[in-house]
Amino acid sequence: MSRRIYFEGEVRTEWIDEFGHMGYLDYQRVSDIATMAFWEEMNGGRGQEARQDNEFAIVDVHVRYLRELRLGDPLKIATRLVGCDLKRFGLLHEMSSGDKLCATIGFLCLSFHLGERRVRPFAKDVAARLAAALDPEAAQDPSLPACLVPALSWRLPAPSA
Image 1 (cartoon, rainbow, N blue to C red):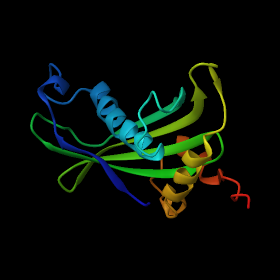
Image 2 (image 1 turned 180 degrees about the vertical axis):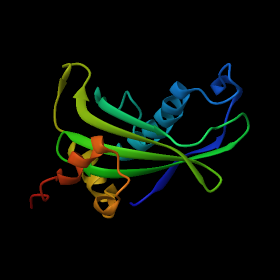
Image 3 (image 1 turned 90 degrees about the vertical axis):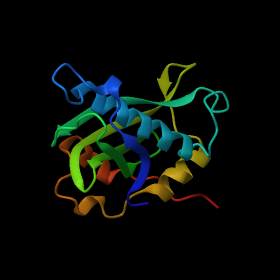
């Protein structure tokens, strides 16, 4: 997977601040919609209950605001998985309106068990989907946020026979 669209719509009224444009926190709020769509796909479509408390925790976020977004502007989020290993993944959302890049939101995430309240490895099927979703071109992207550079070296072990 290089880039995949996990959100497409338009800027909503509730995302507009007192200055008439999309508020800075709402860039992250909208990217969360794309993040959860990505996570559902990596879990084979299983909902939260079926995941048996195996979730993820965001441990670092980097947002670059590049263009203003206003009410009704078309909005799309293309997502790239830039790295993963047994317990971590690095995700980059590219938020655009039409052909203009408006923001990038980079996340570093840990596999996290809600019941145990600790980090633990991804389920095997999730790890396999993550491996298949990796963007092989991410390492050549000079605009990758600094927080995601370490994720380029993360590797999942080869599947055992």
